[in-house]
Length: 328
Image (cartoon, rainbow, N blue to C red; front, top):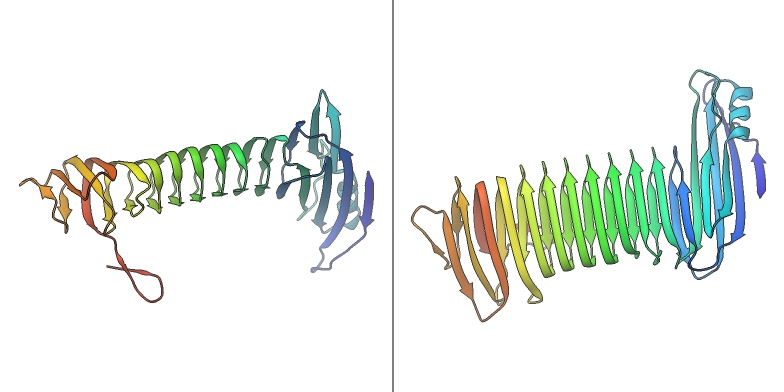
């Protein structure tokens, strides 16, 4: 391991910052498992065609006492070892850190692994970003955001942060608390459970299930089969792609806005309990405003609505102004 000690001292009143860099490169044949345990800093992992794993880390320690900051920077380490066909990357801190006024530290790690590796990564108090890993990912993070870009077969558990997913294939499982979930061009099998935040999906395709509580859900350009269940929040959904086969919307204690695009066929039915259904389209709504059914064209998406203490508003797709913003 190549260790570079950059004795950088940045004056900020009586504070100094010590920066230390770590670099390492080891063989990691394709198909090998990689397990990463990190905390107190950002963790970025990317897949490559190489059969080598490369690690670059920056350790920063800031404090009022130069000697204490330097000693702590020297004791923070990142171990890379291989055991039983698994590559372990672990950030370690000294067990006992001497108290120092205004002492703070962070370790940012960039790791490159073979794209076919099976990845397990845990982080806390920092962001976790993974891109281009095709061998499967199991990610867990606390107090930081999680990002997935062009990965395959991923399981994400997050607490106190947002989850962003772009162009994931295979299966995707997301269990998030106290944050938002953003999905963009995610395909195949998707299940999201979110609490205390919003969910936004664009270009979802496959068998998709979104379950949210205490926040809003918004979907656009969906294809395949989509189920949206929301409790204590609003739903905004669109039927605008003929490749959408099923849309099931379930709401409790919220408001649902359903937008049906012109020239896109559909078959619609639904009911609400202790709520009201309104429509600007030629659908059949009963006198109490509790049931609705109708269709447009031949075939198309099967749309089912179900609500409790929920109002539904059904309309044609909103008109967009010149700036691309929706206008009602």
